[in-house]
Length: 329
Ligand SMILES: Cc1ncc(C[n+]2csc(CCOP(=O)(O)OP(=O)(O)O)c2C)c(N)n1
Ligand SMILES: [Mg+2]
Image (tube, rainbow, N blue to C red):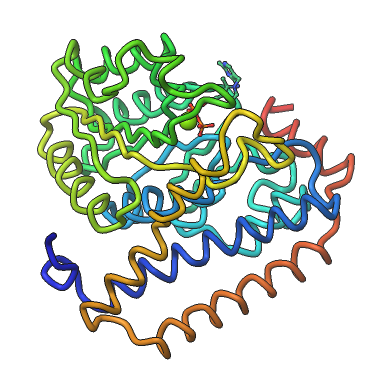
């Protein structure tokens, strides 16, 4: 196995670890708040997916774009949105990144070039292609767009249409499939006739790779390669990151469709534990440094909880103001 030390600096490694721990603790907090009844509607957590979101986003620039899914809290944090305001949005508060009108499933933040999420499976792919078209033909600053999507989304027609145009016009878009082995309650073998999802790229002449989505450094390295390809005007890339969600499809999911043994088997590959162990083994992280990171994250989370809970809900007048802006009233 390649040493982490040979690929990234100690500071970079610590920053990746801190982001992953922040994502995990943030999602644990959302789960707790959901149980307390503080969250309206559905919420889908990314616990287990941290290495994909954090590793991939660490490989792009601040002004590159991302298009995410309803399981997008952790991508939103990884791209640099303010933790307090993301939590406030999930609680539908006026101080949230979208004024409290989006909630958990609809996070976007143009200040960090996060074009956002929706509940439509595969719906992000054509949006990402549209952004990439703009970046290639109008923006011309060699920026790129990443579209995160699930294994279920790879079976949709819209994804194939998006890949077709992206390949035809050689657009700077990278599709990163978080293959968590399930689409809602349906295991991959019952929704894909061919489970090697990287083959989906072949008819379009798009390069593709399957990677260990539990290894943050591997994700970062492969995404860097895809980014270079896209910036050099060579067109799109498909990355299949094998991962697993340790929690239900949505909070409250009774999870009748999978065994405890299966979950335990994947937990042995927990992306944060694996990264911590490797960093300690390589002498890149001490227990004191780990504890300091955990303490700093906890402070951030406590601050976010207080901020979100104390914030007000938007009013009807706020809603009318948004409508006026959107519909030019
Ligand atoms: C177009 C569309 N079809 C069906 C659904 C219902 N649905 C919601 S989540 C989901 C599963 C998607 O699975 P995947 O793409 O693997 O993402 P994951 O939830 O595993 O991250 C489905 C089918 C939907 N929201 N949109
Ligand atoms: Mg899935």
